[in-house]
Length: 507
Image (cartoon, rainbow, N blue to C red; front, side, top):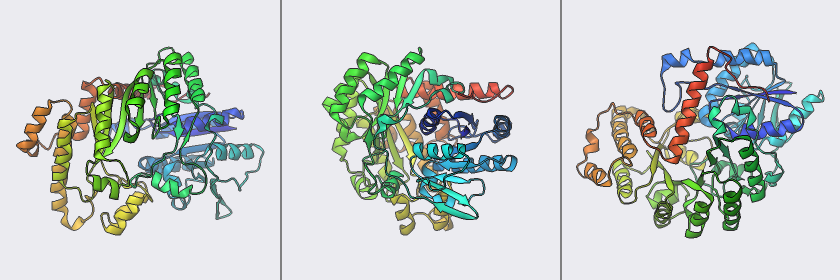
C-alpha cells in the first residue's frame, strides 16, 4: 500500500511515528510538504504567498504518486489549512482521506461532516492506522477499528477509543528519512520525545480535554526506558555525522529523578550532543539540574504563564507557587544553562497594570529569553468552556474557535465597544514590544522605561512579529540558533525548488 501524508513546513513527530509503524508492515510512505512560505506567525506577505503557493504542485505530485490513502495531522491553528488543501485534492482525485491530530480529536463530530474527509482518527493513531491500512490491503476495510470514525452508506460510524498504549518501548523509532530530504537542517538537529502525554491538566491546554476523553483508559503520562531512548539516539548519531543538537519535545522532561540520573550517565557517555528540553518548575532541583548539566543540557523551557498566583491556580489550574518558579529559574541560570520562559497575556482579570508588574519581576530575575503569547482558546478545553459561560468570548467567537479559527484573549468580547478594544490592543502591543526587547537591554534601562512609562510612547510601527525575527537574528542562545536554521532551510530549499521538483523522496 502507498500512503501519502500532507504536511506543513514543520517536522511533525506524529507523522514520523505513523510512518515507522506502517513501514514495519512493508507499506510505502511519502510526505508531501506545503512550506507555507510568507504565510506564518512571523512573516505574512500576501503577494509572495500567492507566488510561492505549493498547493497545486502537491496535487500534481500526488497524481503522479497515486497513493491508496492520504493522511493529515492537524492541530487547531493548521486545521483550516488542512481543510483547504484536502478539498483541493478531493476536487482532483478519488482517493480516501483520513485526518487525525488534536483538533479532530477535540471536535470529531464537526470534522467528520466535512466533505473532504472520509475517515477520522480520534486520539493516538499508530495502531488504528496500521489496522486500517492492513485491512485496505486485504481488500475490505474493517469499519470496527477502535479510534477511527468512518463514513459509510450515508451514515457515520463512531468507534470507541481504545486505552492509551502504555508500552512505548514497543513502538518503532520515529522515521526521520521521510523529512530529511526536504529539511536539510534535520541532519544537524534531531527532535524526539522520551515520554507521551502530561501528568498535569492546565485549563488552557488541550490536555484538559484529553484527560477527560481517556478517563479510565490508562495512564495519561507514559515514559520510555532510558535504554530505548539511548538506542534511538545512538542510531541517529551514526546516521548523521554533523549532528549538533537534540531537542526533546516532551511536555515534561525528566520527571523521575532515578530515570534522569540513569539518562545523564548513559547520554553523556554514548551521545554527548548538546540538548534542549521542556520541564515543569516543580521538577527543577539541585539534583535534577546537576544531572542535566552533566548530560549536556544547554537550554530549558519553563511554562510560567503568569506571576499572579490566583489566576494561575484558579483560572489556569496550574498549581505551582511563585517561590518555586523563581527558585527554578535561578537554579538553571546558576548552572549556566539557558532558561526560556513562556508567558501568557491578554488574560481575563489581568489588566495592563498587572502585566507591567509581571514585567517588573524580570528586571530582578532575568531569563535568557522570554516568550509572550496572547491567550488562545482551543476547542473543548476547560478554560474555553468557562470563557463562553462567563461571556469572555462570544458564542460566535467560540464557534470560530471550533472551526480552527484564531480566537485570542479577551479582545473580542464586546464588539459594540470597538474603539475601547482597539485602544487596549494598541497598549498591549506596546507592552509586548518591551517584553521582547527587555532581555536585550540592561535591567536598569528596563526599570527606567517602566518607571517613566516610556513604553506608552513606543511607535505603533514597531511590530512584535518583526522584532521577534530581528531578536532571533541578533542573539546566539541555543534555541535561537535552532530557530534560525529551520527558517533558513525552509525558505532556501523551497524557494530554490519552486522551479525544480519540490518535494521529498519516497522512503
